[in-house]
Image (cartoon, rainbow, N blue to C red):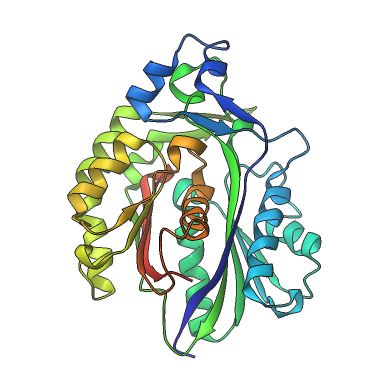
Length: 312
């Protein structure tokens, strides 16, 4: 096999929804303030017993069912997350157990918000190297576990959920070359530190970096796949902030693309945001099978990773 493709997608979000008006009862904020600064209207909040691996397994089960593969066909499980509560068994192993998989390799990847696109590239590389045939690639986060609910600059941002893709070997590559990297010297701009761990960030630093540096990098991702931004049918950026998504998409020049704006309803779900938004676009029929879609994520560690994929 010369490459890989996405066979199917799935997503999961908790049933509990936290509105901006609900947040106004917790901290000094209001709906207009939140919408004007980050564009978020609602976010989903996991129940105490809805763990990262439980949400990951729910999304993965939907993707697996849609793929037509059996559980025993999966030989690699990758879970991108930075909010799993336990170190061992890791989230990927727990997902494998929940789904009754036979003997897959199981790994968690922590690249924070760009975790899913890193994991997708890792699965693609494993398939190209011949060590994997079918992989489950999942982004799952319970970010509400690590937020300070007294800090109005961060608690308004986050939500919980999971998105998953079944990735399989293909003679015709449908997952393009990854472009990934980071700015280590600026990695402290996004942090989840302390005991208990709490999320904090330098919002203006992240905003300036994302809106000024990332459009050119995203264009390079397209170049690696041999297409122009105008060829794209869809653009799925990390759903960090609508005020970042809109200018980055505009400066990219994807004039014919549907731009995912799931952040409005889901908030920032970190590593879950790209697969969650992509799965919804496909489910709603806003992107057709075979269409080229740019997946591009960025954030914690001031890392980034992106690739152009063909829609399943």
